[in-house]
Structures are given as structure tokens and as C-alpha cells.
Image (cartoon, rainbow over all chains, first blue to last red; front, side):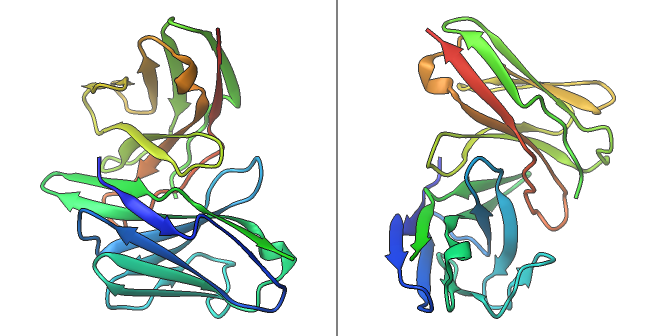
Length: 117
Length: 110
């Protein structure tokens, strides 16, 4: 299967600082990427849809000014958590959509564990 | 987003087949049925997907009801490495978002 890589795998930051998470599709081009957040023992919650070269589309209840998404190339999307607070501590997961004739699949990164202290 | 219903948890003995059910009574004609699984502290892993016909791959089989209101993921011989949370997801043909439900936590007993 295709490979999607996230960096970093985990990060600890101080309250009030910003953290950037990268999501790369390593062996295919992805015009669409998605960002999810997952709290312990819960399912993945879709935060936003990231389209290359255009503004991200955020799900209802997700603050676009707090979670900045940039999809500057066909292989890279970034999520920046601005002014992070302890309640932002979570597992953040990206996925990249690979489109081929008659088939669309989403490949997921390994996730980034964010801890805000 | 179209909704799926799965049992919260299931158990299986090692090397026995496992049938994981999913109900999706509000599925539309163009929704694809996807299955992913997630091991602890990892991102979801693709398992299988289909539209109308049953599908087989090296990991599993997908049986889709004739009316498409339900589907079943079949693991032919469960191994300890198959212990994970299995998610059944409907993907609309437009938008392509994958909305995750609660999933089924599969425990494989040695």
C-alpha cells in the first residue's frame, strides 16, 4: 500500500506555544488530505479537509484560527496548533487520498501524539 | 454524513474465522463501504472496500447484503495480530470524506 508519513511522532510543548505537524505522502501525489483528532478510547474525529492550493474546509465546531492547515504541495500538508493548551493534548492523524481510475483510497499516517503541559 | 452501526466489541479464538457486522441502513446508491482497522497508538490501516459486489483480498473478505443496508467483514483465520478496532465507514462518491463511527474492538484469544 501507499505510504503516508507524519512528523513528529510525538511532541511535548508548553502551554501557549504553537506546534506544527507535517503529513507527507511519500509515493503518490495527494490533492486531498484530511486531519483527524482522537482522544483516548474514542474514535477518530474529522477536523478538516485540506486541498492543495486552496483553503482548508473545517468541520463544524473546529476553530480554523486555532488549527491552521496549509497544503502547499501535492505531497505535504501541515497542521499548526496555535496557542496550544492542555485540552489540545490528543492524537492527531492525517490521511491522504489517492485517486486512481475507478478507485479512491485513503492512507493514514502513523499519528502524532501531542502533549501540552 | 452517513451513519454506520457496529457492535462495540467482539471476541474470537485464534485461527478461527471472524465475522464483523456493520449496519448502514441509510446508505445511498453511490456510497462506498470501506473497512479500516487501528492498532493501539497507530493510524488506521486499510483493510478492504466495496460498492455492491462481494470483495476478497489477501487480508479479508467483504460480504455486502443485496440491499446494501449491511455488510460483514470476514477474517478467515484470526491471528493475535488481528486484534484491533475495526471501523466500517461509508464514503460518499463526492467529497470523499471518511467519517469514523465507534468501531468494533476485536479481541483474539490464544
